[in-house]
Length: 318
Image 1 (tube, helix red, strand yellow):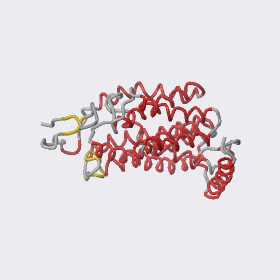
Image 2 (cartoon, rainbow, N blue to C red; image 1 turned 90 degrees about the horizontal axis):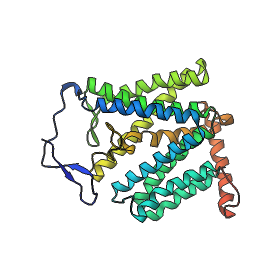
Image 3 (tube, rainbow, N blue to C red; image 1 turned 30 degrees about the vertical axis):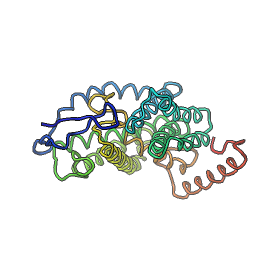
C-alpha cells in the first residue's frame, strides 16, 4: 500500500514513503480513477474561462491576476514560504504589481518589476520569472494582438486539448514511458496523442478565427503549442519531484493545484507572445515571419536601452 508522509520543511505537502511500493498500474495504462473529478472541474473552469476571454476588459484582467497570485502562492509553498507571512504576502503581491503595470500600458516596467524579485533568492525569483512572464504574455495576447480573444482561445485550447489527449490516449494505449525518472505516468503514446489532438484543435480554431485558408498554420502552430505545453508539464513534474511533493496544491479536483493545471501555459503563452512580435500589424502569432521577429526584437532592444539609461522617463515597450 502507498503511504504518504509530510515533507520536511514544507508543511502540509505530501510525499511518498520511500519504503512503500507504488501501486500497480493496470495493463494497457488504464487508470481512470480521477476522470470524474477532471470532468467536473472542466465543466466549471471551461465556461468561466471562455466567458472571461470573450468579455476581455476587467473580467479577463481579474482572471489573469487571480491565477497569477494563486500560482505564486503555490510556488512559494513549494519552497517553504507561506502566504500569510509578511514575506509571503509580498511575494504574492509582486507579480500582481507587474500585471497592474502592464494593464496601465507600462510593459517594460512590468518586466523590470519581475526582474527585481531577485531579492527573494534564486529559487523564489525563478518562480516570479516563470509565473510573471506567463501572466504578462496572456495579457499581451489579449490586449495587443488581433484578434486578441481568438489568439488567447487558440493557445489555451491547444494546451488544454494536448493535455486531455495525452491523458486519454496514454491510458488507453499505455506503452513505453516518456520520462520515467521525472513523471512515471507519462507515456510516448500519450505524448504523441496529445500532439495530434492539439494539431487538430489548432487547425479548427485557426480556421474559425482567421478563415479556412489559415487552417494549415493552425495545425503547425497547434503542434508547437503542444510541444511547449508538454515541456512545461515535464518541467513542473521535475520541480515537484525535486521538492518531494505529489501536487502543487489541491484547489482543482482531479488536477491538484493551479501550477499542476496551468503548467503547460507557463511555456506556451510566453512563446506565443514572443512570436506575436514578429507578426505584422499586431496580427495573430501564427502569421509571424523570421524577418519580422528579428526586426521586432532589435527594435525592442533599441527602445529599452535608452529607457533604462535615462532613468525610466520614457515607456520603451508600452
